[in-house]
Length: 66
Image (cartoon, rainbow, N blue to C red):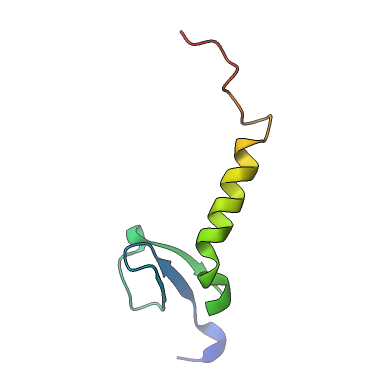
């Protein structure tokens, strides 16, 4: 495979970076264009979750319960 077309995934099951021939997509995050980006997948998820938790457009905690 040409290096320029390689893609990488972060496997949630094994907690490691995989290339195309890895676990099923349901068990991993990606694809990412570089191994380094895939290694940071969980940090990126945490960063996005934190941002969404504090985004007033998505914060529905103050809505009354029915």
